[in-house]
Length: 187
Image 1 (cartoon, rainbow, N blue to C red):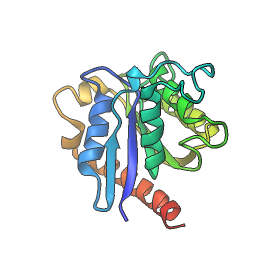
Image 2: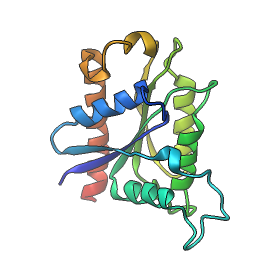
Image 3: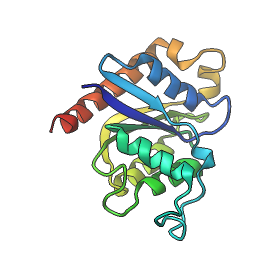
Image 4: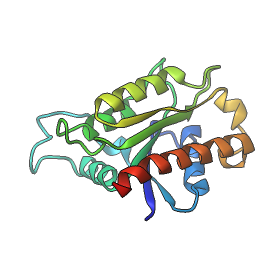
C-alpha cells in the first residue's frame, strides 16, 4: 500500500523557497510514497468557531480537512516570519485541530522542515510549528528536522531538488515519515 503524505507550505509567495522545498519532496518521494502538495491555504478564512458548524464550514477549510484525513502523514514546510510561524500555516493547524480530540491531524505522524533568510534557517518557527501541531493532536516526529539557513543565497539560482545535500535530506525525511506512517497504516 502506498503511503500518502500531505505537504503544507507556510508561505504563499509565488517564488517561495519553502514551496520549492515541498516541490522537491514531491519529485523525490521514494517508491511507495506519494507526497501531495496542498494548494489553497491562503483561501482559508481565519479559524472561527462561529463558522465551524454543520453546514457553515467554508469550502476551502473542508478541502484542507479532507486532504489531511486522506493522508497518512503530514510534512509542514515553513519559513520564519518575525521569529515565529506564519499565520497561514498556524491557521491551517487550527482548522485541522477541530473537532477537539478528533481533528484530521489527530494521531498522524508530522514532520517540520523549511528554509529562511537568517543564519538559523527558521528554527524558532519550526519549533513553534512542532509545538502547535503536537497540541493539535499530531504525532510529531521530533528528531526529523531540516532548517536551511540563507535561503536567498542557497536557492537564488538553484532549485532545492537540484541541491544534492538538500535533496538527500528531503528523501531521508520523506522516507522516515513513510516508515512512521507505514506502521500506522498497517495497524
